[in-house]
Image 1 (cartoon, rainbow, N blue to C red):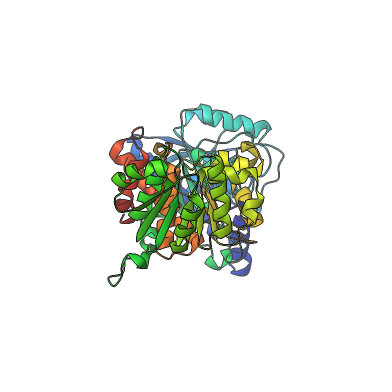
Image 2 (image 1 turned 90 degrees about the vertical axis):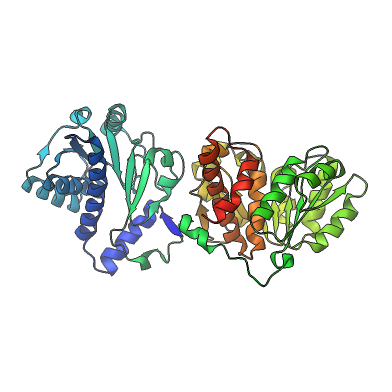
Length: 498
């Protein structure tokens, strides 16, 4: 598990390491500069010819990092110059020190108008502390960088990206690579910042790890975390791994129920029962013979539901359910009677959105998995309002309604339902997964993680990550346009064992 910080948190980690631990600021800066220079040197090697490099610097510590990287490269015999954005802003002490060292090292200082003449730009205009819109000469310089045919390496975060949200503060550098220090930054992980950051390298520059213990940073997973998925015990049976009840599908709509049930089996569930409209039972039995398939109709759904709920250790509610009167009644009954972890998706969420008090009345573990459209209906907010700060929006809703919220998007965010609760930013997945049925698969994967007795918040996070990894493998095998939800189901085993 790794952590992603905001600008405010990054400042606190800096302060803790410097003031409490006594590590000089210039020591951290030198290590940051070495890491940046190493990345630039990798890119230089790809040119296979002499290149010209320009460090474009603001007068803060981000600019000081860039200038120090330029000096290190120059000592290695690389042709590198420095351009300082000349305005009336006060320079930091560290920046002044780096300018002195650069001058002593014989580096050339040029005007920012020369940017198009260089092959590689080191972007050190703004760092993670930026919170205002980019204007004036800074906006002009960023436009010039983006319009020039350079390779751009940003220092810590592309200049102009809000480190808290990933938003563009009116103008932002489009980097090919970003070297970020100590920990990744939230702004590098959430769109549009994610796209503008290019390839992100997290460089260890010597921050004290104690510094983040009081900060509650966002989490994210890497492939190493897949090893945390528990092994299957030799001395076990199907009952060891729970019974997942999937309440899904509607008249002649069986696909969502199948995808959800199959993915639960593929990720560890011992037994899956699918409770669906009676016209779907034959086809689901053929598609998934391992499942118990129970049919209901408008007259007997209440009785069938009561029987199935008694045996379940986890319930999925909503995929393909429809919004007819029977679906409304089923949703209300489940929220009244279910006493085990409940995963709510799709049509059940749309039904709840019509009466949000239904969600507030549920007193057991609930994991809800809305995409942005469904989340808009649940909150009454616009897409722009939700995505302005998706982490904050997710945490606020999770706390208010006492649910684990899986806010599905190009970068999915998972939030825990308590004050100062954990938040997870997903780092897996691909645009190839922009297809119908992917959300149904996700509900089953999360249920599978719960069946392995992973605690609910971690199960939701691991489910999201594993789902994305399976999508990446499917893209490698099928191509970006040809991946279907069923492909992801069938590849889940490879993803678990990756």
